[in-house]
Length: 89
Image (cartoon, rainbow, N blue to C red; front, side):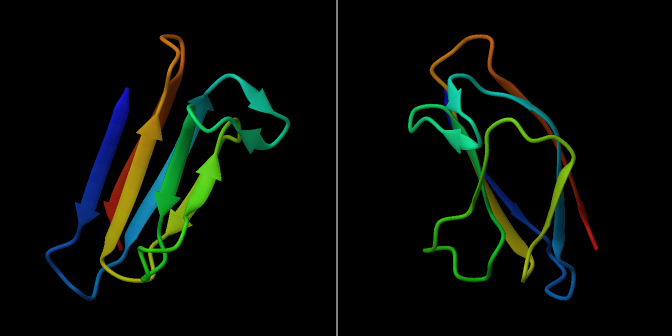
C-alpha cells in the first residue's frame, strides 16, 4: 500500500486537526520506522519538510499550521493499519 491523503479546509482560517488514534505498523525499531512501513503527517506550513513519522504511538494529535495537511501511509505488510480522524478547527 502506498497512499497519500491531501486534507484541506475550504476556509483558510481553519486548521486541520489530525488524530492518529491507533497505528499498527511492523517492523519498527523502537520508536523508529522502517522506510517501507510508515505513517507520515505533514502539518507544518512548509510541506517540503519531512513530517512527523508515526510507527507505533497511539493517541497522537497534530494541528496544521495552515488549512492544509498531508498524510502518507506506506505499508508492505497486510496486517499493518492506521486509524486516523480529522476535523477542521
